[in-house]
Length: 274
Image (tube, rainbow, N blue to C red; front, side):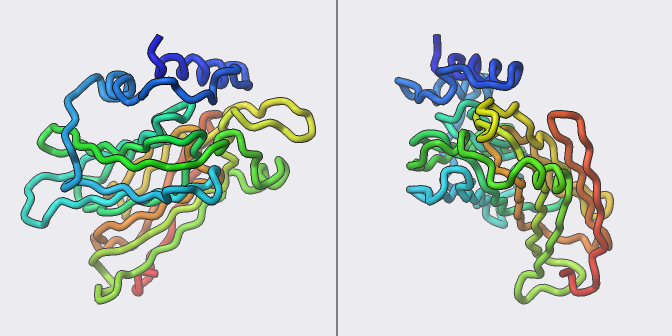
């Protein structure tokens, strides 16, 4: 049985029964990437993406439960192609597809950063799909372990009180005008994002998987970014991104989780863009 499918059975048991199967966090004996290409990307051809996309992560994580990752597009201004989506794959995690980001057609998103759980020493791949219909890949290697089973930083009562709370920050880039230009923005969502591999320290039972699986962001009614998330996104999801403002007066966010909760908020963008 391919290593990827073996781990999928583990995560299926985790999601259905609220506890991981014994092998869920066991590293694959062989390189799982070929199986991941087949199962996540339908075995499509993937080209070297070193001139298309970059991925940045620490070589050795200080905390395997909150490992920073930055995804950056590298297409030149003269390149007529656009990046349509970026898929983040943590090869040795129980559910390897950490997130898929769809980029708004007019937002010109050029950088996305977040925090992820890393369960074993692993390759991490970023795969960009471009408007030419082709896939392009880069990878890095991260030394970390136990991130998916690390206890939650907040207790259950505190996590419940924060559930669905959203905060928004926006930063004007140096040298850009207040109404338009390149901006950095950040969305923070209060959510335990339980992986299903964490044990309740009081009951000694595994906490069922419970995480934000959809996020959509707009400036006015123009889509900026969407995220399809999995168990690898850290507690209290935090997404920071760079985009081009269209002069919008409001920013809007909608998030959904695996229990069907829907969280919505919008914020007025003042004249300074902050």
